[in-house]
Length: 418
Image (cartoon, rainbow, N blue to C red; front, side):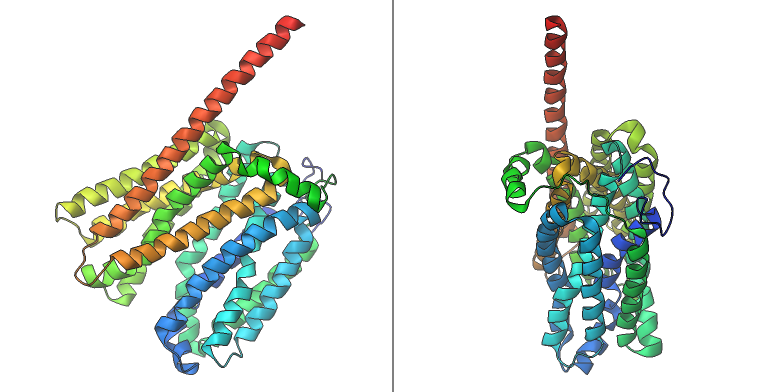
């Protein structure tokens, strides 16, 4: 597909509109958390417990990570469009079925199938890379896409709680089903195939995978994204405990403070969208990870001195969100550009590592926070995660400088030979 074509909404002969890409990237985040306020009511209806139904988040994340390993390679062979449409069909059917479940087991199984919505996020990013001419432009566009996606976790639980109060817990799944159907309709008419026609056969493609997996630059970009986002996932796992047990917040107040990182994340994505093409991906990643590290460092010092408060803990988490918003879109664009022919594979593998690692850090956060604990163990875990991210981005910057130096020398030699 010609990248220079003017984008027209609901026209498959041009690249997908950014509005469509935002919808595709957002449905997964909404599916993850819109029903969380309804867990107690779901447990009552299914004669189960809230703790067992709480596994639906971990099941969803784990399934998303596994599916993203598969969806990337398949999209590099069969194309983006058929997999997007197929994923949305499966998502709609499993979401509709969730309305009629009678046991917790059925509910958890359907959560596995709902997780296929995460493939839409991966493919939206791959489409961005397909339709942009440089990695800087890709990083900028991905930032705008994920900026829209960042708003969903802020409003999803509130919407779900209101729907549950007015119509019962099944209302959230009816809304998800209707949204999935609308997104399918829009995608059917707007998402043309963006993968170039020179697709590789599956076996031929597999032979090229080791070049990606052996790339130190790919792993450095991937890990820098995974570690800085790992701080946020640690926060998701431990902040409810800190808010309730350490600071004594009621659920309503906790919900308000809990969204602090999302505010920073939206701003960070906006800054990436505006400045990635001017500043460059590596610098944006470095600045983002550094800002996140500054935030958790100040928070750790304050809490270690016994001066921790609601404002210091949750307020400084906005810097973690800001760092995520500045680093993740650019790291994603960079890892997909290591081998553009495997952009879908790179997007899927990178997302799988990020989500899988995040799920693990979230579990660790729950494990280290015991009755009587302060917020210090959680902030320490977050600090270690972001610090590892800073090490990764410094390594890839060093690698890129060496590669650029070699390229300059090679060009000088060629010029002399001419």
